[in-house]
Structures are given as structure tokens and as C-alpha cells.
Length: 275
Image (cartoon, rainbow, N blue to C red):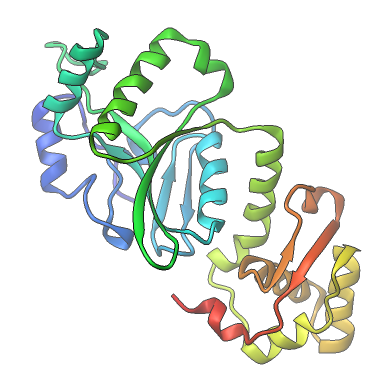
């Protein structure tokens, strides 16, 4: 694993740009800040992407919560985390316009400007056109902090000038449940688990809409498909991860062992692994 980078001066920023940090799209994108580069508050994590085959760097539990929800959205086709607001001249001018202090490097003796980063730059599509949206992730308690509000204003105006919609994500009890459900059933898919279309279709034919026990569904797979219990659970998770079986995400599935199946897509499994 690459070690921690030094980001304490303008020359460090220039070197980072030459190494393509903060640049590129999809698999080629390199986040400006990585897990190993910062001392994060909360639980940092590297999450292997399903839509984009690279590790995504989350600096807090709140960011991870948003990532799982965003990646599971059909309209989002690329997620670029820790995106830098460059050039620095623009963000410093915005700070002056707003009459607030621009962030500076914590360990800079010369009090050099720091690069502001947006938590998530999203590429979205409706099938006909593509557009960008950005999301800043903040704990609810921090939104009342004056300094947090000032930095958010700099970020908001920067994206407003770029013509990109700006949103704030706050982790709530409900969206945390949704996110944890997605994290639970997408884990095998992130590790490379895939099954033949014939097996996926056979498994789907055994699933019915309505409330059911996860254990009962898996037992049906074991009995009818002749697979082991552990494999049955992996198979069910892959059906959920690829949306061939859709469930109500508002109920914690792993903790309760209960899921509410809302739809079973009986089309061929092959389309769900495309792209």
C-alpha cells in the first residue's frame, strides 16, 4: 500500500497534481486525499467499487453511509470522492468575496492556503443526458458551527460558479439503516462473487414477494438447488446486490433476519452484470 503523502505546501500540491491526484474519471480517478493521508474523525474505510472498479476512500462513517446509497442509485454512474477545488486562486477569491477566512495548512509555517475538497462529485444520467452534482457530507451537530458554515459557503459558491448543483448529506437513522443493508448484501459482489445466469434464474424462481425470513429463503435454495447453506446466503446477497430481487431497505435485514421482498425481476440475469 502506498504510504502517506506530504501535503503541507504549494509545492506539495503541485507535485500531487503532476502525479494525477484529483484528476481523471472512473477507474482512472485518484482522490486528492486518501485514507492513509489524513487523520480522520470517525471510521475511515476503503470500499471496493462495483460500478467503478477501484478502491473508494471514505474518511468517516458518514461518508461511507452516503457512498453505499449513491452507488446503489441507478442514475449515478461515477463517484469521485475527496475532489479538490482548484485552482486555489478561485477559492481564495470566493472567501474574500464572502468575507470569511480561507482554510490554511495546519502545519504550514508560512500559513499557506489549503486546498478545499468536496466530499463527492457525482456523475448522473437519465439515459439520455449526463450531468454533475456534488455532495458535502456533514454530521448534523456540525451544521450549527459557524466555521463549518463558512467553509460550506465557499464550497457552495465554487460549485455554483461552475453550474453544478450542491447538496448536503446528513446521516439519519433511516438512511443509515438503508446504507447498512446495502453494505451487507453487496459485500460478496465486491469480493468478486458471481454465479451462472442459470443458477441465478433458478434461485429467483423460488423467491416470492412479501415479508419472509432470510433463513427460510436460503433453506429453499439449499433444498431445491442442492447448494450449501453458506453458498445459499451468498447467492441471495448477489441477487439483492444486482437488483434481481428488490427489498424494502428501511428495515434492518442482517439484525432482524427478516426482509420485505418488493419485486423479483424474472428477466435473464446476464443484463445485471453488464458494465
